[in-house]
Image (cartoon, rainbow, N blue to C red):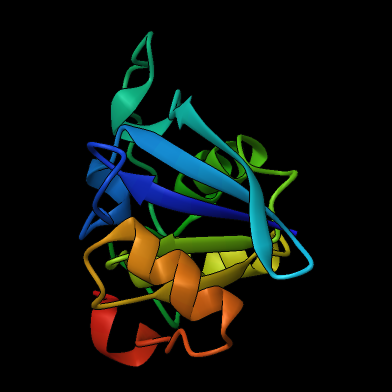
Length: 139
């Protein structure tokens, strides 16, 4: 199992997914981390070659006009999920509800947490004690 945790420094959990330049990815086997790697996020706010932003009209009646929804946002979220396609779990301090829903549709189990230290997150996850605060930490 692999867990991707968004971070700015490799030690703390980023409080908002979209503002994190890195993923710290842990491979867990038999309840123990056996491999750790840092990955640069190459999409979203941190794309190496920024593409012109094209705002589309939103036709989704449940989320009309909301940031993080619509076909353009879905494409961006799919690209971000592709960077961690080998992972099973994504952890962040918070994220927009459109991103949260997109990552879940991509097959990731998404945890939004109030824990700040990455080591605390990994330990809580391995022990089955990581609480998902998604209802409180999506905007």
